[in-house]
Image (cartoon, rainbow, N blue to C red; front, side):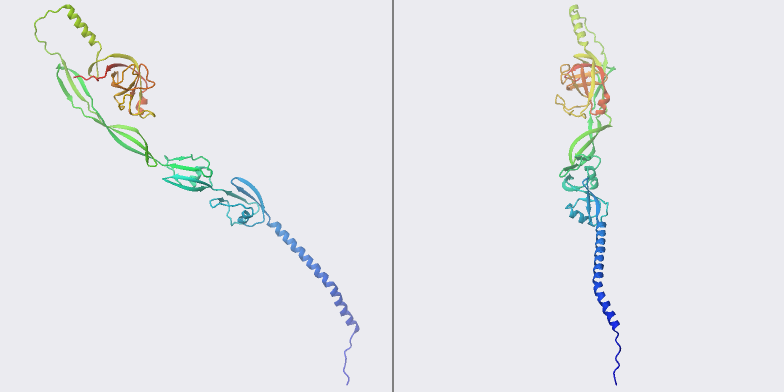
Length: 386
């Protein structure tokens, strides 16, 4: 029995071989074309991404601005690439780890180093503020109303400068001063001459002075009187002195020459011509000066001390400054409307018929103004009526 063999078509085999041959020829071209297209697309994508990542930012360092182009994403990378270093106390407007965007403005303020001396200690500090006042405020340092700072608060901060704060404390204390009483002698016509009667005992008064003490960093630097008040009024001693003439004794008539009587009368008249009765006291004066120009001064004035030119301590109610050529130093005078005063001080502007009356309070001295009075120049001993 024979085997059936399928009929093989000559045309089918020929077509298959032809297609395979054509595929072998076309396929490398397509692959090459597809590869080229892929490369072009990839390059376009990279160029697009590259173009999109390019950013322009504005960098301001200590007020000086510059423009930077960068493709870095973080500020820290931008500063590193531009070789811009930062110190620990410098300030930035954005964080180093923040992502920057196109058109961002980045501000860097460099910190200035300075030394601050306050409260007995010196510290090294840093600030990015422009003035001392702003730096002190930002650092949280307190300044009281009386405190002083050197240099001043509006001074521009510079690197390495020294700043000092001086603490000022003021303290008001009271100081008591005794006011001596005076003996006032008054004529009493009801008492016989030579009779003395104490009508009122004297007692000293007490004045309270308010003293302002100023301390700088705990050290006393000045003190001045800012006010005073009388706590206890001075009680002056009052003495009545009799002026009633004693009964004239009966004596034998004595003949005297007219010349001798006239001489005695002339001497008594000459002696009594310089005797006046003021403030209950009869006293003899050396000379009388009219229209003496008077002003007043106080130790509270700058440059005025408490020691007089004669070496005594200035005392209200006693001390006056005079021209020694007119009134000798140490002499007593009587001033109309003011009383007895002693020439103890001098002054550059006190020339001729001028004098200065001393007051403890500067306000009292200024309120005194300028006055014109008659004065009686007495001598080195203050008049006291026996």
